[in-house]
Image (cartoon, rainbow, N blue to C red; front, side, top):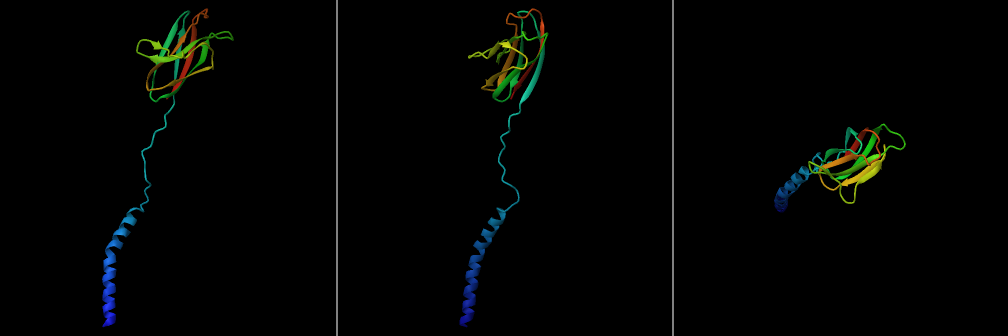
Length: 153
């Protein structure tokens, strides 16, 4: 009888542990799924390159507005001038666009001796309307066609 008492006591102890062990096993199994933990991705900004064509007349200027979607670097580069030779240069500036005019900030973001292939780099500190301005600095002797690329985010 003594051994029967021990078996019954051991059974009660095992049954008493069974509930907590089952709960722990269920929780452990739930945490072992194959799906990785996901976190919201921060999208990488995508560079946008816009190309503008135009003609600057003697003492004239052309303004090209563009919209910056993500603050960051803005690079304007003349990719063609026609007619062009070693002495041909025009003005190039980057500023903010208010819907009427291109306002160049301080310090001035302008190159009055812009040549083909020489970039003008600025920083857009916020999203919004910006502009590139191509202008005669008093050196053109005839209307000059240009191609301008602007890369921004």
